[in-house]
Length: 74
Image (cartoon, rainbow, N blue to C red):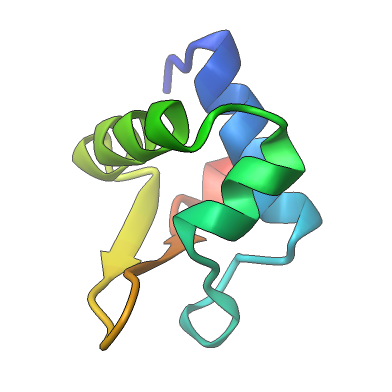
């Protein structure tokens, strides 16, 4: 799978946060802080990664949670 540099930063941040399973998912705020990228940009990157099926988005009460779902990225 071809990822941009910023997409790689986001995936690396998710791995650092251990967001690799549904029970360990993280929200955009946590991922943005860890990746050191602006929250709006991370939100856009998350949409791209969901469309590429690299991560999964789970709707929750307050904020959606994300985790890495593509085993080749772990």
